[in-house]
Each structure stands twice: as C-alpha cells, then as structure tokens.
Image (cartoon, rainbow, N blue to C red; front, side, top):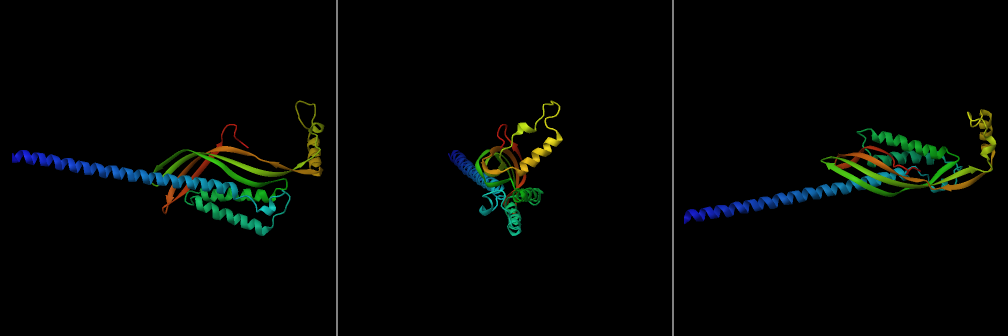
Amino acid sequence: MNKKLVTKESILISLAVLLIAGIAIMSLMGLQDKNKNDEIIKIKQLISDAENMEASVCILPEAYTTSPDIDVPSDVADAMYKRVVAEAEKYYSAKSGILADRIQVLQMAVKAEIESKDYRDKNHFVKKINFISVDVSGDTATVIADVTKQSTTLGLVPEGIDMSKYKTSDKKEEMKPEMKAKLQEDIKNAPKKLVTFTPGGTMRFYYNLAKEDGVWKITSRKGDYLPGQGP
C-alpha cells in the first residue's frame, strides 16, 4: 500500500512540476511575443516619422511658397540647412553612413527649392504607408513598406509658346540648334502665369534598422516607384 501511495504521490508531483513548467514557458513565450510586438510598433512609428520628415523638411517657410520667384534670405537658408541635420539625426544611423548621405541629399533639395525661379513646393506630405513586412531579430530589423506621397507645387509657366513653330520636317532632327536657341530665348522672354501642380506617387522602400543605445535607427533605405505610380 505504501509503495502504491508513493508511486501515486510521485506521479502527482511530476504532473504538478510539468504544469508549472508549462505555465512558465507559456508566460515566457507570451512575454517574448509582447516584447516583439512592442518593438514592431516602435519600428513602424520610426518609419512613419522618418518619411514624414523626408516629405516636409525641404519645404520653405510659408512666406516663400506663394510663388517660385520669391527670394529666400541667407539666414532662412542657413536655418533650413541646420534643420535638415537636426531632423535627420533623429532617424538615421551615423554608424552606417546613411545619416551623412541623407543630410547631403536633403540639403541639396533645399538648395534646389531656394535657387529655383520656376517651380517651388508649397507642401509635401505622406498620404499613406502600407507596411508589407516587419521582421525583427534581436537588435536588428528589416522592413518593406509602400509609401504614398503627395505634393502641391507652384510653377511659373510661359504663355503663348507654340512648339510647332520650332520643329522641322526633317525626320532625322526634330529641332535644329538655332531653333532650340530661339525657343529658349522666347521662353525666357514670354509672359508667365502661376500654375498649381499636384504630383504624387507610391514608392516601395526596403529598410534595414538597428538598435543604437536602445533606440531604433535606420541603417539603410532604398526604394523605387511602383509601376505606373511615379509623379
């Protein structure tokens, strides 16, 4: 009887141990899933914030976006260049080289906005981000996302230019050099009207990310417009 009792008690103890271990494993797995989901949320927010920054950081102050031919003072230009650096540092890794690259690209875009006398962006914004995949592995992650952006651009367009006057009937040459020169001169001297354009499109981006001092940073960002989705 005692032997049977011990055996039964041993079985009960073993079952209890297995049950406790199972609960512990399930709790650990649940905690890991929660932590992973929390990291995915942080990564999505980072990508969203970075793309919104990319869209808006080159837009000049409102006083200079009502027409492309408004001159931008040097102090405003300097503030824009500094703003690019401060904003890019929030999202891009300095360790991978992408930070320096994005600063250069965005500052060139600001310079183009300032120097252009024909076209200037009034606004540029993210309409939608569709996250296709977010894969997290420890302190690194990869993301694929479709980013749809829209902008409002003001352009000073020459009026009264009849392109047919500058073309030739020669099939080997659409326009002779002297006619190209005349067209350029006529465009320069023609009256211009202010026209609003609303270009937009969807790009598919591929991102790599890494944690630096506990904070996610983008280490690479490559993308191209989806077929038929360019501006």
